[in-house]
Length: 365
Image: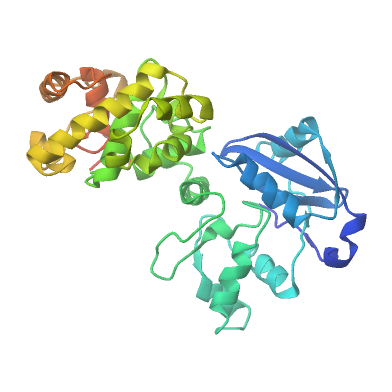
């Protein structure tokens, strides 16, 4: 990938003469807001449940500029960037130190992550780690100025304006590009970075975190009759309207919450499925009282260890099992909704209770 040029024009002084065209469009990483001038791209932000928040950030950053809304031209720019791999010059607004930090980020290779300390050392300012972190946080051109390639010294994913999940996807996507010939399960759509990241980093890996189990179970119930990719692309929306899948909170939802969720436009508009998440949350509270945790309930069905299946071709893999039948029967007795054996088995695959990666997939075992 060619390194984009950064314009060093001092827009803190000349901003009144800046004319920006902006608009919304789809990218492989979700909806985005892009802004551009005759000199290059001046804003790129990604949208989940925060469209107004992202627009306000764009507007505040370029508050004195003339702005023209044009979604058709925005779509053209986004397609050129993410499909045709065209690299535009970047137009930034910031202090000299911030610009130097952003230029340093452009030197980070794809597929490689760095730390705030590394960036500070690169700038020959080893004690300026906090200032570096602050400058990275002020980046207004996501992905193209790759602040997603910077992580904490501990290896933890630190805050990211456009969402930690998207940061993980960006990193995974770039890593995949470096290892494009890596063998994966044949069901993975290689044109969908979010799907690749999900397969490589989540699907089939043993999951024991309570909130994550509740979230995954709930999302599996939403996929009935739909593709998992459709649900996956709306995961951030579900998290936003379901209080990040806090079990106690969801179980206490009222009729007004159901209307709020439907009207949000952030999830699949299926009243019965939305009601099922709430109903199932109430059932899970009873299960927690009885078994101590969701983790104990589900993983006790496989004696605490994943069942590794021989899968030469995913099309011939099981879609139900005696265990999924047993769990389905028990949950239905408890009043759970949208819990057929196929759905339960898909949940078991996703949370790692069974390892159904194809035998030649690099994630097997």
